[in-house]
Length: 126
Image 1 (tube, rainbow, N blue to C red):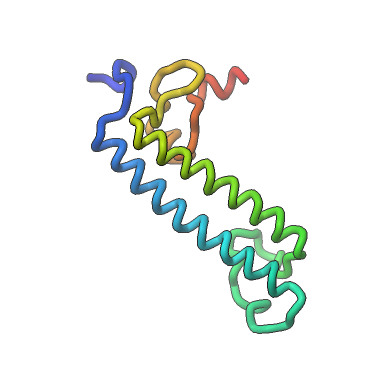
Image 2: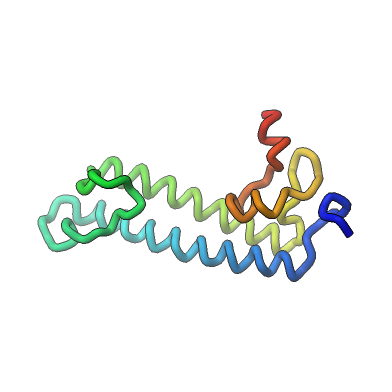
């Protein structure tokens, strides 16, 4: 059966996406915790200031203001929520189905953006 014919991903495929999402959640939570630490240590001058914590940021931004760290932490929290919502969709077997067209979102797109709820076409039409 071709992907365009299928109405949903198989349980095996869903399991593969689930692992991908769980890995992303683990990494996102780690980044979130590091941001939270940076916010709570922003006033102090301890060793954390020099740790290479923020690989996520471009080089040169070694010192992050409390406000910037707060914004990044918020974005990270939102990202985690989106990933957790994707896990719920996997659980009820609606994962990977475009909420606009009802067709399957390509695996390539889901691997790149595992919490996507729109196919590329639906996204372009927005």
